[in-house]
Image (cartoon, rainbow over the protein chains, first blue to last red):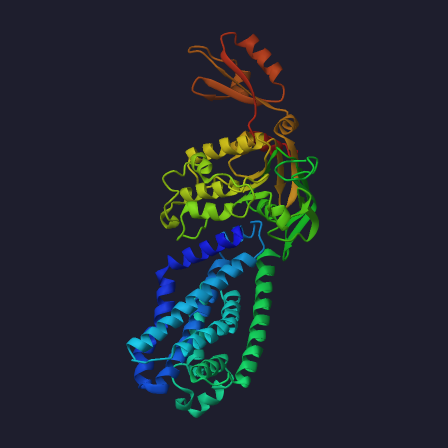
Amino acid sequence: MAILRANLALTFKRLLRQPGFWVPTILFPAMLYAFFGAQTAGGGSAAVYAAASFAVYAVLGVAFFQFGVSIAEDRQSAFAVWQRSLPARPFASWAARLCAALVFSIAAVALVLVTARLVGGLHIDAAVQVRLVAVCLILTIPATFMGTALGYLASRHSVVAMANLIFLPMAYLGGLWVPPPALPAQINAISQWTPTRHMGEVAWAAVDGRALPDASIMALLVFTVGFFALTWLAYNRDRRSRFG
Amino acid sequence: MDAMTGRTATVPAISAQGLGKRFGRIEALADLSLELSRGEALGLIGTNGAGKTTALTLLQGLRRADTGKAEIFGHPAGSVKARRHVGITPQNADFPEQMSAREVLTYAAAHFDRPKPVGELVAAFGLERLIDRRMDGFSGGELRRVALALAFVGNPALVFADEPTAGLDTGGQDMFKAYARAYVEGGGSLLLTSHHWDEIEHICDRIVMIDRGRLLLEGTLDDIRRKAGRNRISFTAPDGVSPPPWVNELFEQNAQRWSTVSADSDAVVKRLIADLPALQDVHIEPLDLKETIAQLQMERTI
């Protein structure tokens, strides 16, 4: 327990003392919603859908920038190598990272909802908001594996560029910025094959009060297993090259 | 039973047999066997690229050996049980710059059952001014002091110190020497690599020298000096006294002080006294580690 507490303290202090990390991660989704989502949606159910889209976008941002970037930077640092000499299994460090991701995801999603209320004048039912936050927390699982795989595949020098190169097109292709019906037909066809589209479908169902779509749940399970396998392979490759 | 490790006191701190490691075509370490007892300090020396750091990473369990095996207090190197007894100075003091030295030391201490009070290490390594400051503004030497404190904060029974004083000022080097020696005299075991050979001489009971991944020399400093079989002889010649020609040939002169290295110091001093009765302040001293190794290398004994 003391080891977990120590890892939580280390993880949160490091992140909170880097405004360069948490300001964009938490503020950007809400800011983009205020600039584009609220305006284009024009109020009503479309604006609620847009809020759900930007909530998913927020979860992805935390996964890519907290997991992806921080893992890539940490794993090549001498401090991380030294941490391996401490008498603990990696569980505590992973748990602390996951806990931080959940907290930052909740904060980012909550800020999108607050912005929707203040800027878009949306009145989303409290139960719907809770449902959306709960769905977003579940969506952190596939998103986290995506970010983690990136963290073990990219170098510390290239990871920010790679994260943006994957994260931004994925958000667009998934219909998180522009609603799927408004996407060009060819893009919409590609969209069906992206994890972000299925994350969006699940979030839109959550705010719509519909049952979560089975096809998207299945697709997300497949993506989660796939990204987990990719993370495992990348992690072992990295381990062999540095500690083998 | 040993109070620090909970293992029988006969189990060595380090026991390694036939360790070998290749990186592609390069053989970084070949068939290295060594043992470190409790309460002993072992100096691992060699030139850059000799294989010291590779040996250390294998013993620490941070890399896997291709051949051989290593145990720490009877546990496989790198296992959690082994790591409970081990403190390590990171060779590159690259700490999270958002954290203070106290926060990193407290973080490390949380992993051990009976850590040392941070205050003790603050005093031992001169961290008073630095301990609560964020490390983003620390100089290399200041970070190095934190790295030294980190190795000892868990109150470990074995410390690996890989070039611990590289980049550290002389005050810091002296602090480390004093603390490390007291740690060993208090029953701790230390494996030290350093290019500061005076540090090795001051702290270590025994020395292992490796070259191109292979063991070259092993023994106590006295054993190694005996192997070199030389002493340094020095004396002062008073003003107006000119030494005989054989002294001019054998000795080097630095102002009024003359010195040489000899395998038969007694005979040389007897002859000096006979030929130069006015000489003053005669010293016969063992060679220091650097001179001893240089002598052995010159004679191709190693």
